[in-house]
Image (tube, rainbow, N blue to C red; front, side, top):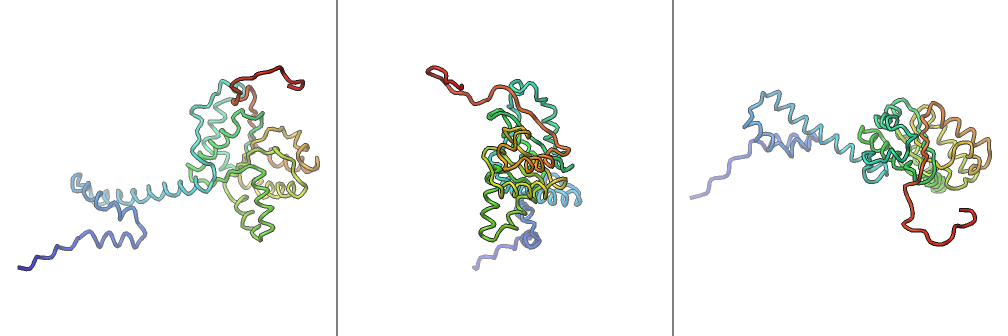
Length: 259
């Protein structure tokens, strides 16, 4: 006796249709959601809402993952363990307000200035991750890396694409500003980036040098004034003072003359 063919899966056409509509999560979880519905017996409209919410949630998470990956921020950084007591003159409520990312919506800048190893990069990355969590576009790099990339793009004919990548994100984070002296062309490139983003996009600058010393790494005081003037316009400035976090385990020998 011939074996009877298995009855067709009544859910298969629905799953296929969902896949054709690019509702991939709804298609993948359809069996699971149907099993839950058989138990809970929700209204038809409620069941439809559950399917669409599952799809929307998955799409949102994929979008956040793309934002984090594109940002170059690296592993997630928060301020939960930040030692505010080591920075007594830095009000934690001001920094926590910045974590709402309202400054990004208002197209304002944030300037983090202070000695090395005082937490500037940690705060800058935490703000960047907070922006990514709100699906804002973020790009993080050292100032030197951005300028070198733009210079290389001029040589290989990709300048416009790279310039848009730097100036287009909702939030640009430039770390280690002032770490190395800039050539006149590099300073002009920085000026173009700052001008393109002024009052249109938000920029975070982390620097060891107060703006009055920017002429030390820029070729001319005029360039320093022109760049700083646009960066500090309606910006929030956070000053990091106190003892650096990174300390040696042990020090041996007599102090140096200039130590």
